[in-house]
Amino acid sequence: MKSTLLSRGVLLTAVSTLAITMSACGSDDTATESDASSESSSSAPMTSESEAMPASSDEPFGSGCSAVPAEGEGSFTGMTDDPVATAASNNPALSTLVAAVTAANLGDTLNTTDDITVLAPANPAFEAVPADALNALLADVPQLTTVLTHHVIPGRLTPEDLAGTHTTVNNDEVTIEGSGENFTIAMDGTILGMEASVICGNVQTANATVYIIDQVLKPAGA
Figure: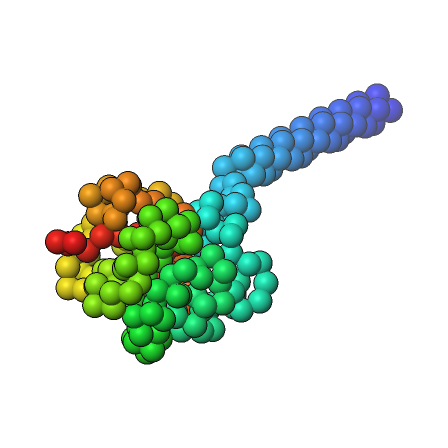
């Protein structure tokens, strides 16, 4: 009888010890899996929505863009469907430029020339020129043609390509300085001797990229 009781006691002790050991091993495995999961989660790259969706560089920029109609043929969307002279004629911010282009008989030429960049003086740029000087310019078609073609550069210049010295359709040069959304033309390159700035840039038409500026530019030798 003692032998039987002893054997049972030894057996119970062994089973109890085995159960405790298995329980401890299971706890360690669970902790290890939890730690691995935590490490994997913490090491995973965090990508924000703004990083996944970079800002577009194709949109018009500049404070002067507020003068462009929000809807209709003269809006940014409406202008993309028309060649540049026609697009400008639908934009009230460029009405004086359109009158000058019409006086110089350049509308068809601008409309039918592929891939150009136009530095387009806004209405206040022309209004700043003394009336007698402006009227004289509008009446002198050869000189007016020289001035207007000085504002046109072959090829579509993106904002990234805008800074630099470019040959114009007038076969002279215009130098643009700056980067990002800030571009200027030195004061010696304008009719009034004041620095010109791009006030609404990267405006797209069917055949041109337009940069609206706040000064009328002066051709070389003028």
